[in-house]
Length: 289
Figure 1 (tube, rainbow, N blue to C red):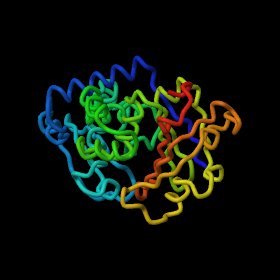
Figure 2 (figure 1 turned 90 degrees about the horizontal axis):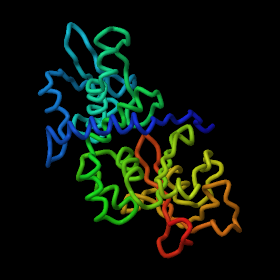
Figure 3 (figure 1 turned 120 degrees about the vertical axis):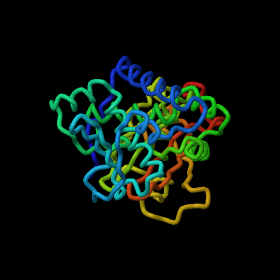
Figure 4 (figure 1 turned 180 degrees about the horizontal axis):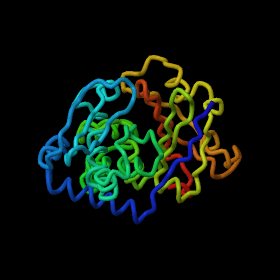
């Protein structure tokens, strides 16, 4: 059965406020180098510990005896320098630096809670911390500067992951958020559909509602191959051609808007599969560019 949790989105003003906060911290601490969340924590005298806590949470920010402490779960993030660990660390720093989150912990109004980071929760507080983490690790100007020099698709995202020390999930979302090209990112997990993220190029073309069931995916496509556990090609992802009507149910097969798309699907271990959809540049009508 597909996972149909409602995807929460922040208001543009609130999102801008959090992005400016995170990017200001990135510029203050690491103006020209990759972000190291442990250095930020030490500078702010926030204690932290990596340990095994089974599958309970990715990270926790705790306030006790006037001090803050971050716990990061190695059973979920694998090792202390992994991209997911770095994102989780920055997510918990978000709970600290976002005033409303920190003050709620300090006052006791909100007890410490385990977070599932990297866009696994649509609780507004978690969405804000995820946005903070993404913006701290991948500041807009730096990310866009590199993005413009790279091709479209997973090859670009993988290169950005290496440069910024970030996971495929967070980097793919950042890519879709900041690119000026049409791009859709769709996440599938063991329950089926999880969420989607559309670039402004797709959104402005009114290509917004996608299929939300694995049963609706065309058999033999890149995504079905990734979901079925077939051996992954050397490039790290599956690729196939597709059409807009296969993914956007309000477009009919015979419509002039039924553009040819590239479909790339990458398995991301126990966290599922990420599908990218984007136009084949020379094959599309001008209405989708």
